[in-house]
Figure (cartoon, rainbow, N blue to C red):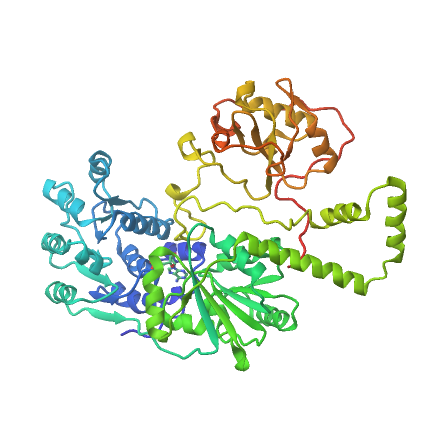
Length: 607
Ligand code: AMP
């Protein structure tokens, strides 16, 4: 086998491919990539035992792309996958790796999809076809897919193809490929039937199995969260709010993600820094030193960057992205529980990564407990407890006499109770970061990290405006927005444009900053930027629309009871009613403070 490779540039891959890898932010080849790419580039057949999540797509895709002759618009590579989802994912991944290869064409083909578009594209010519066995057979029979120029055949998740009863089809397809083609067969397990296929069709294959080392990690409590119902970032922030941690190390896959996630955590008030292979030694030492001193509490790192990190304070390791292999997992969680201390390891597992979870459990010979995410109530309780503690500490440590006199003076002038004044002050303190946790939006679809940084596939992109059918249940406001209720609804003849016009005008708010509007029978809701000045909100309460005072108030803080039927939105939102929103007539300077734009709320307090 070839020597171990630590960088992608060592493989001798074509420059446009390296450029794409650089864009995506992969730092170093994963073990399966380091082992597979060199023999595949040499043209050898390969038998690889690898699970999903190990980076096996790039392991076969990169050498395959390197070998494509772009000037020949003929099918030079065929990838067989068990499912249409995998076919689409692999095609998207390859398209991303090929983003700098001019004129590169790839086509996913699978059953259930109309033949017309596939036929047209096959006729026009493609370099790579990724497909499920049934549909590939169809095209071969019709001779709409011709494999006489085929160089490479990849069998991806061969054991799944076996489980789904596709093995005969796969053999049939193998029989329709030219004899000199290279074959790469990947399978998470190697049942006898797959070994037989390999023996029959592969020529002196390089066999790769990423060995899982075991290690005892007894002082570390290991838990996993099955990604569902919440975005990973929301789950992480709940954990951050509720877990008692000293310092935390969070693992992600790419350099780009280290920076992005660290920035998001900073925006939420956590002292955090990114650590990745682009960061030079001096900076790295400074960051690690900050963590040791407590100047920061969180480091978001890639595997490579966290190598050798030894900071006693690290009480928690979060595997935000699942590691490639069990060895990496053991190494990651070993960054906590240092010097005989106890440590906590939490692993986020997407549904399709469950096999890796099982592999880790097998390799470490320890079960990993499922964890239930802290509920919103738990987060709220924790916030309230911290708030009370803050009051107690402030009473203890600060000289408050001048402020006491101020408050007493105010009480005498205004004739309100001390508890009301205290409540108003408490409101001001917690306004930027409410004590009561808002409901968080569920992921648009099943939660799965985009396969490639910055490349969320088009079909998974959240539609800016969903269609009416998908909006039957009430939604939650976007980050940076607050949902308000107004007492005018469909039965009063209101249209979204009336609401936009009135609010934009009266709040001196650009209509672009007015978010989703939902109309109900007797009321409506409107999303407005967080942190609107109190006078503006007070003014908005008294605004009239369709002859009714709207009585704007934060949703949920309203007296009128609402039954389930009246909660169901009946109309489209202002965003997609097909009409252009009227540009709000600008008032001359009202002397009112300008409301803040969404997301520009003031800095939040750390923890
Ligand atoms: P796969 O096993 O091919 O499904 O890949 C799993 C995930 O790992 C995908 O999101 C890839 O984008 C990512 N990935 C693959 N190779 C690397 C690498 N060398 N560095 C970082 N992430 C990678």
